[in-house]
Image (cartoon, rainbow, N blue to C red; front, side, top):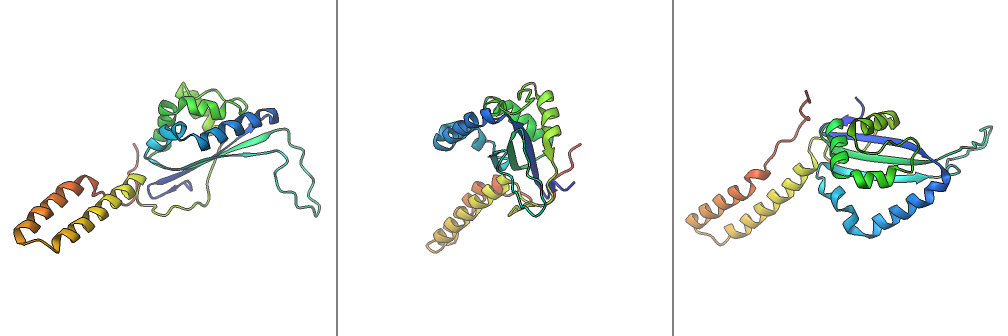
Amino acid sequence: MSNINGKVYAMNAITPMKPWKTWILRVFFFLLGHIKPMRKDLVDLSFIEFARWVVLPRNGFPYLGNGQEPEELKYDYLLFFSNFNGTWNQYIDAFSAVLSKGLNLVWRWSEKFPGSVPVTLFKEYIARVQFDTDYYYTAYPHATANDVKSAHIVQASLEQLERQAEQCNPQQFADAYLQFVIQVQAHVGETGEAPIAG
């Protein structure tokens, strides 16, 4: 599937909105961008590498001229882009369980949105409005977001050990090394292809 690259899955969804609803969503996005506690639950979902919503007005589509007929669209469109680790089902389940109120505030303005709970109807809706992703960028396709965070912890701990080693006798170094191993053992992961979900 073109949406999967290593451990990273990309998702795009496009939903139509009546133009009079767009300004309400823009106000919500403004508040979301300026009030950090409103983003806490989204940030806490550590398997999400990237998530973004964009409102595209019906008159914002490119018009190239040269024989192209101008479009007279009835709806504005809400575009959702995301990269995450894990399976599609895990991602939608987590969104529904943890972010249901926020998702409802965002997507409730889209046509035929059933709500994020119950999750079965939400999954059916997302499946209908989702589009395959042919190309996308991921800096570390064979590592999850948590793998990258853990790598930073291991690197910082190794640099601390290096600084300590300059002033240690052999026994002090052995003790410092043991502390280093204990400190990083939960952060030494494995990169590679994602396991196939059964």
